[in-house]
Amino acid sequence: MLDIRLIRAEPEAVRQALSRRGEAAAIDELLALDARRRELITQSEQLKARQNQASEEISRIKREGGDATPIIAEMKDISARVKGLDAECRSVESEMEAMLAKLPNIPHESVPDGLSEECNVPVDQWGEPRTFDFPPRPHWEIAEALDILDFERGARIAGSGFVLYKKGGARLERALINFMLDMHISRHGYVEMYPPFLTRSEVLYGSGKLPKFADDMYHVQLDDLWLNPTAEVPITGIHVDEILPPGSLPLKYVAYCASFRREAGAAGKDTRGLIRLHQFDKVELFQFTEPERSYDALEEMLRHARAVLEALELPYRVLNCCAGDIGQAASKMYDVEVWAPGLERWLEVSSVSNCTDYQARRSNIRFRREAGAKPELVHTLNGSGIALPRTVIAILENGQREDGSVSIPQALRPYMGGMEEIRLEG
Image (cartoon, rainbow, N blue to C red; front, side, top):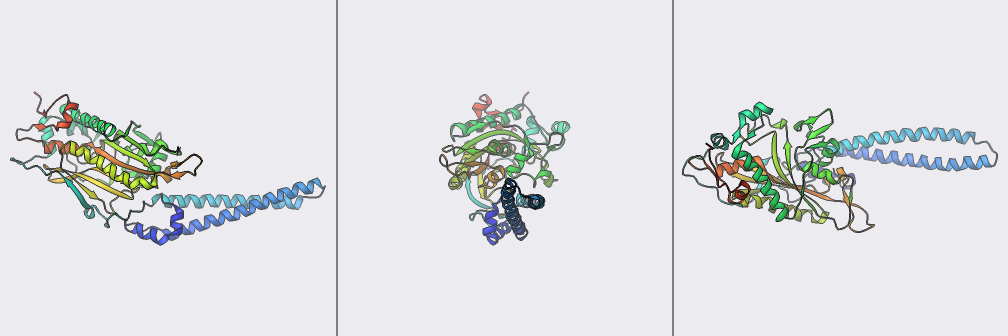
């Protein structure tokens, strides 16, 4: 959530910044509500001051044996007016909060202009796409021939957009999760978390997913809980309403979490294979940092996501996402895309974002620089480290052989019991 003080002090700058994201923000309406709220507070405080004064007068008059009836009548009138002003103020504040909740974060100056992913700017690439002596096949053909993924039975169990992992496919999924967790813990210094797969509405609001993305998530109405759309959400919720003590930052967390998305706005897109699923696994990186360190932390987290793909020997590229394509809570976001030769396209496997104080303000997460210091909002950063379905795609398509088998990346073999390849089991 944006700071109303910033909007009040620099309304035109905020308007122009949000217009870069394609947002026609009602800044004037918001400022009018803010002015009305402050006016109501002033009027209420003036009346409350009169109440205090009148209370002292009534006590004095009664001690002196006088008649305080007129002042008591005035007190009743003031009390009713205060009650009305406070009720109107709460209504105005609620309307302001609803408007502020819909506004995205302000893009950083280094974010390129543009309103769609076509405007994202490639900034780096690692590895060369493999050349084949045979026509490379898409992952669903490879997986079905090896009997390691079953799309038909997955749909039979849960409907379209779900898949059943089998045999070497199930083992590959588990190996990737453990490999990535171990890498980020031992090499990159993250602390492992294992959060609930269900989250409360308040936590989703704090992370910036509600109210905007309600239609893309699964809601358990009976309990008012939501299936986790990404591990970013429950990790944000770990420190809601906390003041983190001096010396505790940065906090670096890594978590495996199954994630669930209805993808309501993506009907008909990439329906084959693993490209777009309603349930998918992901290893998530998250940092809580001091404000002045957050953009350095962003670059650090990007390096950590890239390290996974390099260890797996998968060609990838990095994009600086344009203002219209960064996430609601993000001020800057990088996408990391892996090459899928069977599909002949780049596939996003990680987005790494600096959300500055946007989530912290909504979630009331603060820190103290030293004992007794005034609490400040932390900065939060998140990134996939990395998402699994498209990583599995890349492994199958880049590691495929003409005989139908798939070579397992060297780094994963210890996690697969020494297996060097996936072949059709007899």
